Image (cartoon, rainbow, N blue to C red; front, side):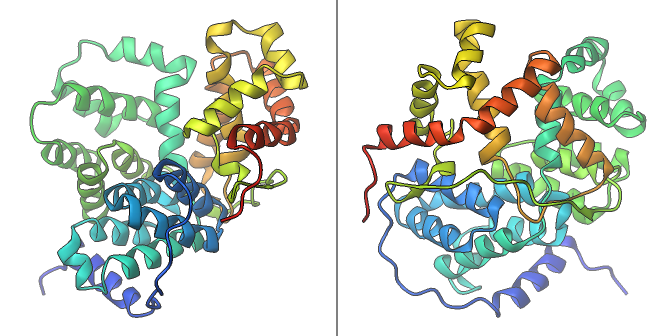
Length: 357
């Protein structure tokens, strides 16, 4: 009996799941920019906040549907990943295009249904944490120097056989940068050499093509080492307030207003601001504070589920990838967590005070 292809396996799962989604009613677009909506969508999915997920989905469907679909694909690999590979495969399949989504009930139904499923799913940020580690961890530059000058064939051997997963991902990243053949062929070659199964290889190929990132590749490689997923305690969420119809945590460094709020906080008299001004050069302070805000607020998850490798990567990302000493990192994260109420006041100032649409 012939085996079922990954495409048809996920197609069957997605079609069955689509039968359970309600038909969404017509909603007026929410009063937010497409950038605010994209930020709200991802952070609300991380927090399992279904009403806000639907609000952001509705807004993006109206203002920028292409951004919505690419963002859902990125979220699947960045925030769900190894915790729910079946759902990642279904989201990847839904990125095929409008004609395919029409067969499942249309743009609004598929977008709302999948975004809700992502919000309710168990979650793992291991692939994105790995991306941060290979870019910002102090040891990564040493690994790159050791791999520099290797041929593609030797890098392929490293990806296939090296015991250190960080080294494997750096080798794959270096080869991808210089690769001249189509990315899907490159990914297939690397993942076959690494012994990754066909379903995850298909997700990595399609996901990379649809999102334009290497997160799917890192997720695929990590599937071999993450270990048995286990539910971790929900991350502790700071106090939340409404600002101009948005939760404060949607206004982080990835929105124009959020970045302006971080600059405003940095100019103030909070302990976090004073510590940054006293301890770090002017040029890097805004970025450093923005990274700290991500770690203590906007990058937090509910329904976190990870194995030992994912837990280790999270620890490395949070403390070791800030580019400062570990004692400084611990101090900065503690002070930033305490400064969230001050940051929300800055956000209210930047947004012009509370508004209700």
